[in-house]
Image (cartoon, rainbow, N blue to C red; front, top):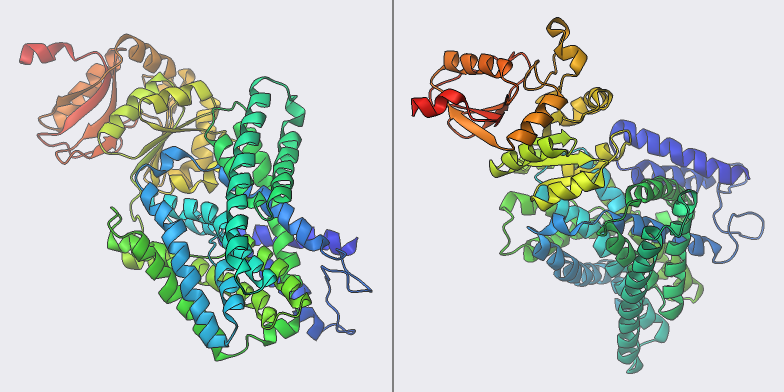
Length: 612
């Protein structure tokens, strides 16, 4: 009981430390696992581990293969949660690159790392390629925390995010095929066995995932599941899909849950966000437990195997030669620039799937007496820990060195997707600004997407927005909802992360009627609240521009807008086309020059026609 409670407590402490230091949680988790596992044997009186994951006759948490069953089920939940976050709309610019990375890139890693392991450590070809298959994967559990703290162009983040999730089942699939080869033995029977296994995994994995996704979606839409059971029913279905698919084709469950998550994630489900929040919380707990257990399961003798120059040489070849080579071959002919390719080639941390399957296959082969099997688990853990440590500490610096670090975040995050927000979002998008609308009203979000505006359903009271790597380039925040409390909350909570260049909100009716107490973050005008904006957008649903001659002209037009409820100033557009947000008091003191334009919502200024 003490060990189980200790794992959970230590895991959550590690997650908190990682959050405070802005590091991937896998780093402190593995270190804790090593400290209470193999390293503990060096300082405890009886030379035993503080936490023994597998029952050894006197102590241990899991009997027999119980640990690996738990690991497999936990990984299925983690991958399903990752699949839920994959949206087809994200990859319209980089879809071919992602496809090549998970195919050609995987092949380069498989062949390159296998050859390197064979010649450096003198391992058999079978064991060498099992090792290379296991390190194909780049887990989302380690990539997401790294990217979360680096402002990058959206395409770069999308490539790394999708690769990290989609490549997990591919790496597992290749590892299974190599494992089957070793289990069956060399000979003419291997080719037929491998092809049959490959076909079964693809067939049952995709079929089960697709079918159960639609079945669960049907049950949710038809209200066949009560709200309070929604999350636990979904969890049980995920586990059912994983187990059933695995029964028909060994190790096809990983592919099935990823497919199921992707299909559900791209459906218009009313409870999808609640389901995602639940899975995120569960994934954090499972990841915390898994990494400590798997690291603690390593023996001190395994670590001693790696104390030589061969380990450093293999790590250097995998990280500094094979990964960049795979990326450059996969991105050849794409729209990605050289510096963007270099950054993607640098960031390739391995995660939970590699560690989990390595422990499972390594132990099985070791029990069968396969020569060199003792190297599988420690070598894979070396790659996992080394790549995470390297990327967590250098990714931000490397992004600055190669020039992909966004020194000035120009994206605009708009809270609320009402008609006013959609009009403003459309204008910003047409003027080459990255704009994202968020709303908890799915209908508003759908209307925004129909206009080609990037929008997402989100609850601003949740922490999920701060974890969203798609919002890394947000530098301006505009709270445009009809609820003054929500607008104020959004400014207070997100202005540091998303509003570094400016955070604004609409004034409410009370503030509008008391100009002396208008907030500094007031947006557009201190005479226009959400009601006036909505009325103007209803009567005149257009955004217009008027050319300015000088600063006096600009100030005069702003005075006119204060007296006319149907004209609301929005932005100041300079001669280069750059847009500057107008605040309620105009405290920005813009140096308006001839050729600048005032961008406004509502009816056209009455005198414009006369001037023309």
